[in-house]
Amino acid sequence: MKKIMAVYDEDPFYAERLSDYVNRKEKGVFFAQAFTSRECLQEYARENEIDVLLMGLPEKKEEIPDVPSRRKIYLAEEPGEETGGKEAAIYKYQSGDDIIREVMAAYCEAPETAYGLPGLVNKKNRIIGIYSPVGRCGKTSLALSIGQILAKEEKVLFITLDTFTGFSGLLDEQWKRDLSDLIYYYKQGRFHALRLNSIIYYLGDMAWLPPIRFPDDYNQITAEEMADFLQQILNGSDYGTIILDIGDYGKQILPLLEICQVVYMPVKEDVISQAKLQEFEAYISDCGKKSLKDKFHRLHVPLVTGARRMEHFPQELLWGDMGDFVRGMLKGQRGLWEN
Image 1 (cartoon, one colour):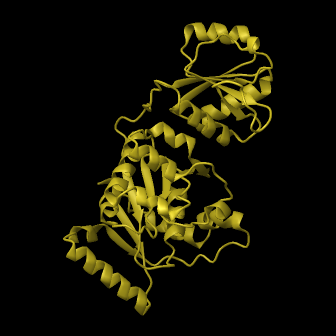
Image 2: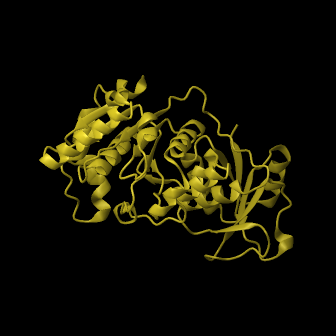
Image 3: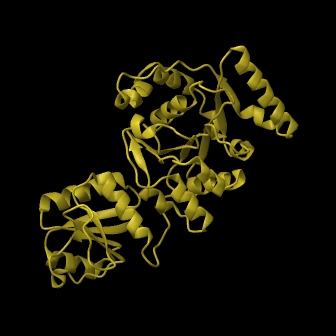
């Protein structure tokens, strides 16, 4: 059953527009209903249990409508404006995605919050890994291309374990929270799928998690815990596919490779690259994990030189040589991760 978000604002255009955006963006989580009349809101609340009441910040306390809700969140006219109480306040005039993230973060801190997500029965779960012991071979570009293309027809979440990704410039985003926050909640035993919605950003149809900013944060979690954490994300959310860019993850990678249904491995033909591949395969064999080799699919991917402007980079990956390569690669290969 969907959670109910009541949006109460005297401006009907704002309330209806925000409600419509939430309903389009948060399928399966919240159902938003717009209200511009206190009486209509109170009448609705008598027959429906409201999980989140999102409303304008009143000038006087007595102007607050007497409406029961699990969590009241105020819409502030100015950034950083405080409510004067324990209630949360978020800036009213920011993007719809930013509002949703802030609402989710506040809602997750409400007491007795119901954390389950609806619509997860019989969901096909898969993790598609991208990894190579060879450097500068197009791993992240390949992962982003696969994610964007698959997201045209299914719910995809992109996660990178790389460090210093450059995503703030390449994807033109600045974020308040990142993967470190989710790892913290996981280690505290407080992680649940709804916390994803306070962090997730979108590149077209593809959802992605902002990467860890400080490599030292990876010391919080072992490779085995990271693998378990990723499985919890997959099993508890409504994403059917995780695209996992393992990147230069500095810990033991075998637990991460084991949870992938398929691992695409970009390679190069120069002597140094081939020597690295041989050492990696010897390492796999020495660890008694020869069966992992069946998951590896070596690829020679097109060189991505980069667009003249960073903001054009994602579109170049989708519609340039890399996108054409990935669309051709994916034809007939779905059985690799469906089984």
